[in-house]
Image 1 (tube, helix red, strand yellow):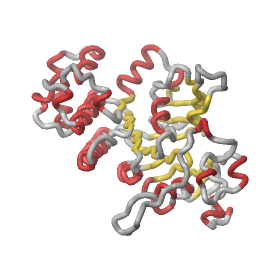
Image 2 (cartoon, one colour):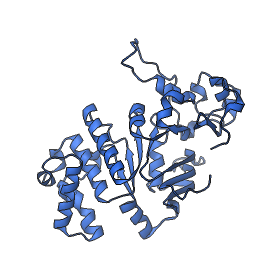
Image 3 (tube, helix red, strand yellow):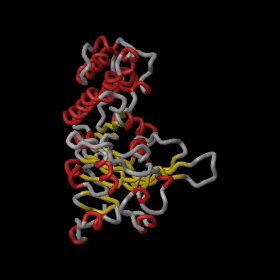
Image 4 (tube, one colour):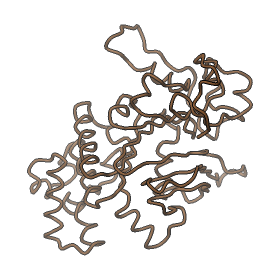
Length: 340
């Protein structure tokens, strides 16, 4: 895959391995062959079960991997290789290029400092903005993310705000840095359904209004389909399917994606219990020589257990599966040609 000069973020054949200092074994893989790109203003969803590599992918994109991790492949931000950044270039990338919205704001906001100090510190220290102007900017952004009476909120401590309010504060802190890319790592997991909807609506509106690219990690497939233009489905450290969100529901092809879609509850169908994917999720380090999903797949054949599938173009998406033609009864000539 050649570099795309229009891409805001481009990840090409990313492989991450981690050594265990307590063992003499070779470094174990966490991610294998990850390739994706994101255009300015686009929202890309990463979905999959826990341990599939979603968070590790965006941590690699921000250079926040464990010290013993080894990285192969390329990660480019606006054409510049992030893996080669150091010193001022890396600090600038983290300060103004990319912003991170974490899953649990209480774990990332200092509980002993007021909200105003948390929001204005980077503006005052790193950008030389006067404290009064920084406070005014922080209050304005709090209003933008739906927090009432911003002046009072700036004087409060984190324990005085609800989880939904704190997640809005976290989003505000990211927006104050004016990034071109937001990485949202399950930002609604700890919130109730009503607040989830509000927070996702804020992120989506700000992305569109400001033209910010966003990678949105979630376990909620329906949420990803609603928010994102494209969705990448991950399993055992690999992307097994990548396609437009609007096509995923009707044209999904990989058995794992079909299993995720089939396990969702429905208000239209009464069932004694939800359909579940058999077995347990696998990490990349547990995978055998073939397809990591083979031991949970009802369609698996010998080739699936011995040979890793390469991505192919199928139904306008990129899919890793040996058996697409058999599963979907599509003649080989009907495929859109070319590997991803």
